[in-house]
Image (cartoon, one colour):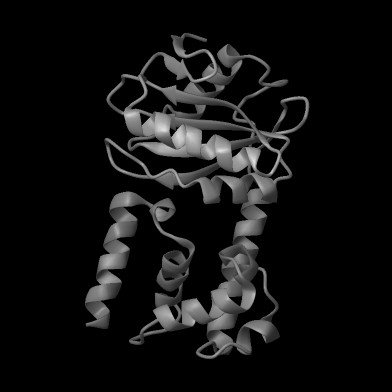
Length: 226
């Protein structure tokens, strides 16, 4: 039974990407590579209860990890290794994607979005954290879905904005069909994200939907070409 569950988790990773997982599911999946032939969901839950977030788990000290039921030395070493690799990657990976200056206009944001999302095969959602001068702090892909939809959870957007000390947020996602016109669910999700950000005094600068050659700006309420 466990092997079937593990196979389903790994199949989902291949088809939908890591960003389709919740934090508990992502940690459960990671643990399958360190803990053979055992249910890893309970251990993932215990780790999140102890440390709060996946990021905190991966940045935890070895001794603290080993204090959690189900986590031995090998598993603690594995989680620390994943955290160290992720931190090294983030610190060395260029995040501007060719961007120079700030994103002060919808046209500039649309041009950046088209460049950032041009290689995405599936519908994906990026959160771009901006400083008070609308300069890029971090671009992070939070969600990846199918050819027609990707989940957009306001809580995850808020967490990303807070983790990068954002003054405002630029929300980006693509429509693989090529038509950037917003759907009813896009409009609903945008309002939900905006309300969640406003509650913590972070502005939603814009939400850009990318098509093949043009983009839709929620701030302009129109399609624009950079």
